[in-house]
Each structure stands twice: as structure tokens, then as C-alpha cells.
Image (cartoon, rainbow, N blue to C red; front, top):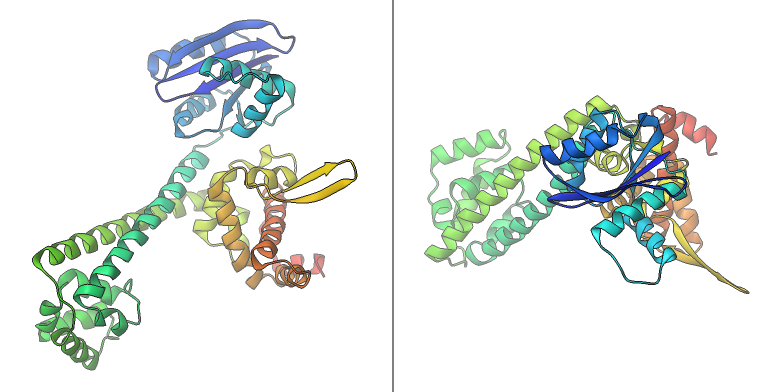
Length: 394
């Protein structure tokens, strides 16, 4: 068996090839992250022998490995994605020296995959990496959109503070957004005419009455807010950026939905887990079949508990919080909605609360149960059935 360790970086990759007997087949060499480099790497790989006699390991460190992963998959090679923590701990177990270079890491990765029977990650389709890219992009865009909404709110506090109260704080409503985009400052809102009312009535599907229209104009006319030419310019820029982000998020979500429909993931069938949350969970876990049991899935999400035992002392630890933060956040968020739809989850939550656990800790227990359920559904390829689940948990 050949063990191939690859340390990934932006412009080049370092590779080491050895055998299970410890023989060095090819000492650490570098190949560029381009067509020439890839051709060089695969010519060496193809010369080793049958593909099932080659184990390839990569650290799961970022998007720079995606192209190599896809080329490996296309050429029929399976590979192992290693959590960087595993590689780091293996390094510390082997030596006390603080030596870390790309070439050393490549050899170390080969040694790690030779030390244990890790499950390979067969990239049968490009859905998982693409879904991971899209869900993480969506998360960043939503955070940016929230930032611009805060900026928009702050600017309204100065220029037209009555506007927020008029819309009960719902600045994201279609009608409020239309008014802010088309008219913006209070002086223009105060001068709206009958044609403006007709536009607003259509945008709100008839819900924005003439009485509301007249009231808003009066508030704009008598506002205590003040705004300069610069304030007006900043307001226009902010609302445009907010809406651009909003439109982009809609486009990203549409693509995510398209991929999720192709995957038909059982995770999305669990009550309380929406399409976007299911997409994040599936994207971060990838191919669930590579996990030997649900305990490995818990550890991958950082939801497992630590433990300290020494002599007569034995203490349960806190949540480890290793692994993907995106995954852990998604699981904790859906845990709260799932327990509102699945009675046994809510009963378990109350049990933990009655034991003196805080809301957050009790919720983490729900998240763990949820991961075990996801593992069962995904590995058996069955969709969630509430009646069956209730009968099994009575």
C-alpha cells in the first residue's frame, strides 16, 4: 500500500509518497498549482500501480484544495480529508521540536493516514464542495446585509426617526424598501402625490391604504430629523448596497435550492430544518458514509464533550467546539426549531432543564440527538416519518 501525503497551499502543493513498511518511494517534492504541476503529479501517481493500492491524504484547510480534489475524483482516485487538529496532535505526539514546514507536513500527513484506517472521501459529484462554497457565501452575505441594515437604521434615526415607528420597525418590508429606494429623504416623502399612492398600493397588493399614505406624508412634513447633502448621498448608497446584497442572497439561495433538489437529502425532511439549514449541514458534513458512526459525526461538529480523568478525579468536560463553526452554528440553530416540531425532542429538552441545565446546554443535547438522527436517516437513505419516530421514542 502506498501512502501519499499532500500539503496544500495557494500556488503550489508539497507531496510525500511512502509505503506501509516505512519505505520512502518519493521524498517530499513540490508541484505547482497549475496544469503543468498537475500533469507532473498525476504522472507520478499513475506510475505507482493500481488505484486501490494508493491512499491519498489532504488536510481539510480551505478552498485551495478543491481543484485537486475534483481532478483526483475525475481520474478515479479516492482520498482522505484530515482535520488539521488530528495532524497537529500527531505532530506533537511524535516530537517535542517546534518544526513545521510544508515539506515536513506532507510527510506527516502520509504518516497519519498510514497509522489508522481512515475512511476515504469519494467525490462522486461536485455537489458537496459547490454547496459548501454557496452556503458559506450566503452566511457572509447575510452578515454584510445585516450590517447595512444597521447603518440604514442609524441614518433614519437622524433624518426621519418617525419612519421606523410608522412601519413597526419592519424596514425589510417590501413597501418600506420601495419608499426608501424611490423617495429616500423625508422632504421627498412629504411631497408624494396621487401617482405615488398608486405605486405604493400596487407594491403592497392593496394593503397600504390612503389613510396610511396621508399619515406618512404628514409625519415626513413635520419630522424632527435633519439631513445634509452628504447624509442624503450616504443614505442612497446604503439602501442601494443593501438591496444589491438582498438580490445576491436570493440568487445564491436559488442555486442552493437547485442543488438540494438534486441531492434529495433525508436531512431536509426533518421537521424544523429548512432548506438553507439542511444545505449547510449537508455541505459541511459532505458524504456521511465516510463516518463510521454517529459519534464521529458529533466529533466532526465539535459537539462531543471533553473528559478529564486522573487518579481518583473524573470530571465531565465542556463541549469541545472543534471542527466546523458553520456546522455547529447550523445544528444549534435548528435544534431549537426542531424541538418545537418533534415532541420527543421537546420532552428531552425539558428533562435537561429540570436537571438544572441552562437553555444553551439543554439545546446542545438536542443538537446531539439531532446529529444521531441525521446519521441514521442519511446512512439508511430514508426520509423522516414523525409517526414512526414517535413510536420508537415513547
